[in-house]
Amino acid sequence: MAFADRRQAGRFLAELLPAELREAAPVVLALPRGGVPVGYEIARALNAPLDVFVVRKLGVPWHEELAFGAIASGEVVVRNEDVIKWSRLDAESMNGVAARESRELARRERAFRGDRAPLDVRGHAVVLVDDGLATGASMRAAMRALRTREPARIVVAVPVAAPDICAAIRREADLTICAITPRHFGGVGAWYDDFSQTTDAEVRDLLADAQRRYAESDREASAQ
Image 1 (cartoon, rainbow, N blue to C red):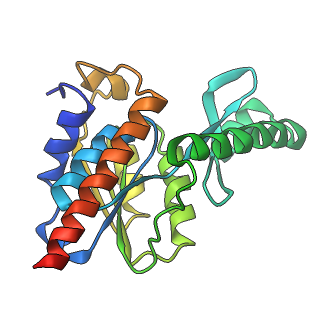
Image 2 (cartoon, helix red, strand yellow; image 1 turned 90 degrees about the horizontal axis):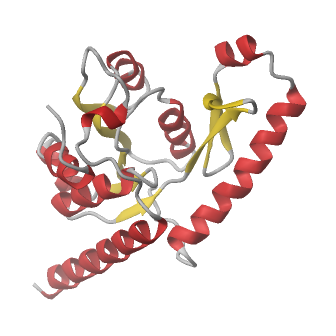
């Protein structure tokens, strides 16, 4: 099967989440940009707040699509030692990439969230969402950064993932839901009819709409 687009994938994925999550006052955190449309639909289904959790891939300087690790909010770094060894990266090169991506991470957080503080996840179940898992480096960085914020549990939810990567993430998360794990994976984009890039403006609009919707729901619940 293929998903029409990220939002349709989010609606499909939301149906696979355990029913008790809605009663656990969950928080939905989406990895931007592609994870935000997916997370928007999950947050709507769970009547939960939505925020971004920014993760940046650390690419080998002469082959940037090849990640030797990732960095997430909270300055948590996950390293792929096999790639580092194969590419013979030295500390100076890795530090240079990490410094550049740290600046970009900070810029994106300001661009997406503005002056709003990050959602407080302490004691909450967190649903961590992306549009798919290829290497899993970004998701591992996100999980390890989130652990420092003391959530009650971390639920990783993605529409599509490479089977071995989904299995690896399952060993670290409290619960992992991969809607489909194709044997012949071929990349995340292969499983979407529309995999066009999500823009910064779309991310801001979805976050703002989710914030308004959740605030209205909270007011209605308080009035009852």
